[in-house]
Length: 205
Image (spheres, rainbow, N blue to C red):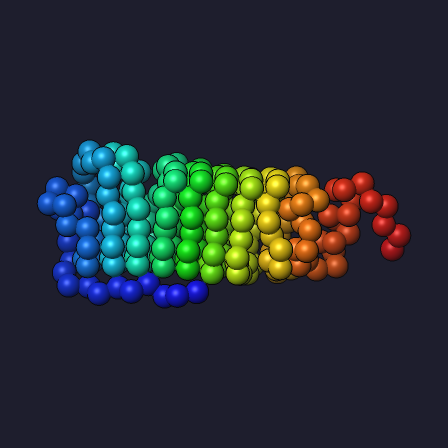
């Protein structure tokens, strides 16, 4: 995974950045307010404690950014690319990533319950210590995805390509899935038994 290329030249609050169209090479901190904006591309920024749910932004994109303690819940990231970004301790409940791409991204200790990964491409990325409970993974294509101690309880996995993705340190209890999604997936022995039962395979122990 390639690290973000972040060059900070100033510190600015989110309202100022939106109102002045300054979205590059800045450190953005939290601020109350509501700004209506059609499209915003943050490039090479550090963004801390920003609640994006209070901003009426129609299209939001990130390149080479580090987002820390931000709230991106229920936002629509449809048909965009997020490249070399880190989401650390962020809240992303119900966020949609429909037909989007994640390249060289890190999700670390995030709350991503009910997140929607439909028709998503994920490459050279890491999911670490993140809550994906009751999330939707549909037709996801992966290339070098690392998963470490995540929780996928009650999530849906259908028609995905998780070849060589290691779920063995994570929780996949009560998932609904199909054979394609678990084909060549790496799991531990207990998970293997649970998945076999899901697929109506009788297991003798």
